Image 1 (cartoon, one colour):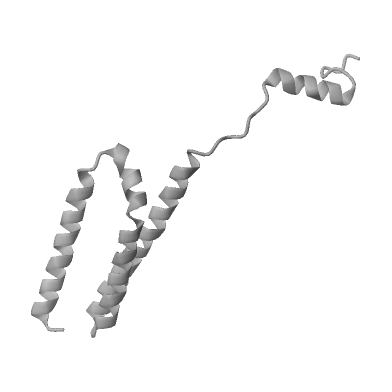
Image 2 (cartoon, rainbow, N blue to C red):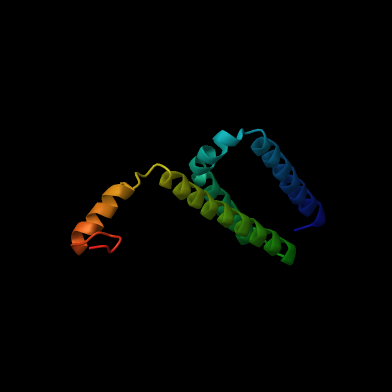
Length: 119
């Protein structure tokens, strides 16, 4: 890879970082989590692109850029699924907890004497 081609690749990389930051910063906080969970397939494509860069690299700088791209893409994929899991966990029903008075009555009945030990 010649240096003018490297300059073009680095320029595209920096511009894509800038555009990505601008797009994400305009998303309201209430929509960020659902959008990120829906975008996991796009992150997978980014990971495939990083592997494609690794295959076409022929020097140390190309390998380093491919490794960094693959690491960021993999972190993005894993993070997206973690966020999705946490978001889905919010919609699960919690087990019903009996009221404290009912719990006290059940414990007293199972011991055969009052809870305060006065019997």
